[in-house]
Length: 287
Image (cartoon, rainbow, N blue to C red; front, side, top):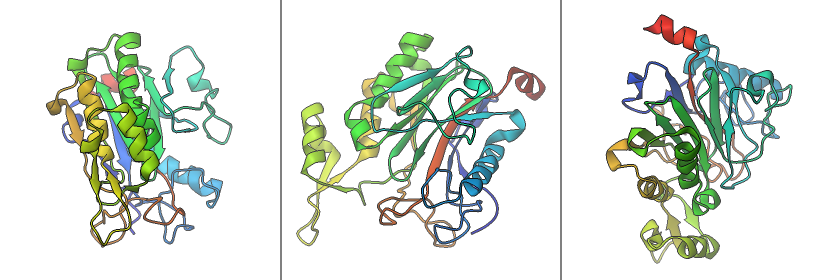
């Protein structure tokens, strides 16, 4: 695996000169616990904190480190809890993380309009959803595992953008990032029942395994989160689905492209999906 940090970006978002964003992959890191030098960005129990810190430094630099971006994350709990990062809440003074850079806030969504803050969510199969308000320069990142998706975190988050920041849904663009696909995401009756109790279209999100397959249900989390974005008022042309399965996507060498909790039997690193607004001084120089 090469030394260069590989970042997956949303087609078309490069037109926002003030925006920095990206979905990480395995490539370009210094962690060795997951089989090869890799870009583990999560504070996992298996990896050394110093290596994770170096991986994070490399990733932020690849996203736009020259723009002095401060990474802010969450202690994720598979909820519909969304936090707003404001200019006056001490976010840039470290109150949202420990001295080591570990998150303090518990939740699964972040929204900000503060320049210089790079908000992010960690995944290793769950769905990362990034949202950008191109007019008001408001950005959001949501972590949507099956529980968060069933709780409607994306719809909750879009409503917060509208109500708290004055965003208009017609000005929003969203990206459903790399995550486990319906090809690989076998689930049990608990998940099937949870979605059936919440969504009238739930059966359209599942496929049934064939006779030789021991799994009964396969869940399409990409479609589930796409439906929530549409229900929140976005149109299909405002939404990009990256469409790469973390459990089976491969890089050019044939190795796993992403970390996958399912694909690696529970021993996996974490990706980060981030979005942020560069500082005004940097924006001025870029113009």
